[in-house]
Length: 287
Image (cartoon, rainbow, N blue to C red):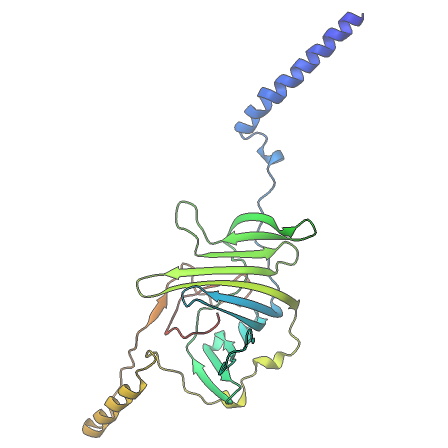
């Protein structure tokens, strides 16, 4: 009797070993067990529409790294940005920026001299995950004593094109952690790395999006590159003196960002287009 029980136990152990060594790998290779073994692929989360905080931005091409505070309105696509003092430098001026994307206007304010100028628009960056984004990774930032769970996304399309945008977002709350954006064509090459911190939900004072009195009535800037103002105005003055008023062709150098994502006229949201096509002369501004 004891011999029979021992034989049964040995047969069971052999069958279990065979199943774990041969049958399970075969099932996994045939895709029969993937649904039970592989976790589901995450879907893009939605970043809060209204928030405030701080960020640093590294302009790789210019070799500059600056810090800013930001009030972000993803509903009406508006940004209020103030440059922070990072180090004491003689003559250093800190600027403020009011971006009203739907109105296609950006104001640059110099509080030192109480001067406001209207500068060309840049593409809207939502600091959120596009619906078509590709999930890249999920990991912890930090160590055992303190860490943050982050999901990483990109606009990469396998076997079609490499990524030009990579973003990291917290697993809880979908807050932006970092944003990397690069673009290159025949006329322009840009590369930004943006890191976010001290973010809070909501906007304490919505009046920051009101156009300051010193900015009202400004004329839309020319697309001519800097340094041509004096010579251009002299030539125009001579033409008007000799030939009378003429129609001036304001054809400056235009830099165009052509992006795959089409511009939409639907109500904006944090999952709308991050980088719509926009033609402009690029100033040195922090976004």
